[in-house]
Length: 538
Ligand code: HAM
Image (cartoon, rainbow, N blue to C red):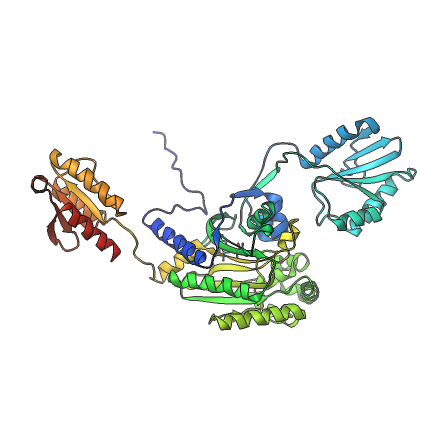
């Protein structure tokens, strides 16, 4: 006998079945209610985006981007090869020759060498310029170019971009004798896409794409949905997990915005009974003070490198702030001796953090300061925060968030300030359940027990009317003996049996039986509707 394969949900994903799904809906709908009372509107976002968007915004060196994204390639030519074809077509009349030419050591660079009446040009085709061009690599291009073409005094270096370079890049290139040409690709399709590991980045992309800075006031948006990270599954950690996030984008970075966002978060947690929580806050400075602090931290970490494990050793160079996030017990005593960002904030960041704390006090929000709260995404500036809850073991963060004032600009948008958070729904619900604070929700109100073909039309009709009054009603499709159908009603957790037999049809009434104690009464249709509706309200 051949064994049949049993399909199972993939590791790190889960099925959320009724009645648990009712709790999830209640949790999400309560968030909607609370957030809308703070004038937030729901935004529905795609579940996958261009990989590059996440890499740029979250940071290529973060665990999320370097290890955890579900990424795949879309077929189609790369941006670079499309640019190359477009360029050749546009300039074909001027060309004597063109060839792909590996010039730089170990790299097939530049993409193309061309000879025209004016001499030789070496060309690189690039998708975009932001963060790619620095004085150092312009000089490196120049040097490699001159070594390769020592006799070609008239040779030019040309960079062809698919995106308009910023004024800075343009100036930098021209001052160093590099020419720039921009060719925009019609109907550009990204080559590599990823399931979203989080959604703040998508909100920022949307803000730019839909020109939302032109709208009045701050943009206050919330989203609900699944996120995907290829993490090692354990209690409270999944590969498909769910977040409820909220973001405020606009021109102001007033600490009152940070405080109001935190107030809203905690009002929501209280309303869903998630009360055994602790809020941790920190400020990680901004572009004026953090680079110096990071350098100082790096220097101090280099001194104790031998005492650190491999991951932390690597992070000394790639992202020293992340060492502060280490949970490895042996590293803790050493980390406690490191310089703290709070002693190295610039005046503006210090004042911002002080005012945030005043605002929290004004709103009666209890918090703890945690200088090691640096978060695992690179886009944060100033305020960072996390909420932990009891009953969850090591994965006890139920919410994380903070400010990301430079992020929209980094993505090529206008100067914009931003702050937000994301709640982990899986963990929050786990914590509520473990605390025994989950409310009993929904369930079946009435089971229509009918017998005899003459009672069937009355059963269909009353079921429809009760359902129209938003009551949950089960109507058996086939006739059953009363004993059997009321037994099933009980097993299904129905609160009432509505009995319709010959007697009831003859007297145009219904027998309503409360299943918990057997209490029974005869009611007219109007009375039955009124009774069950008032039950639902109570
Ligand atoms: P995050 O800290 O990466 O922040 O995630 C927020 C929350 O999502 C965590 O506190 C946790 O409850 C939940 N979470 C994260 N990974 C998993 C997982 N593998 N399994 C279950 N739950 C998980 C962000 O995502 C930022 N976008 C938050 C933000 C919004 N910052 C500013 N605006």
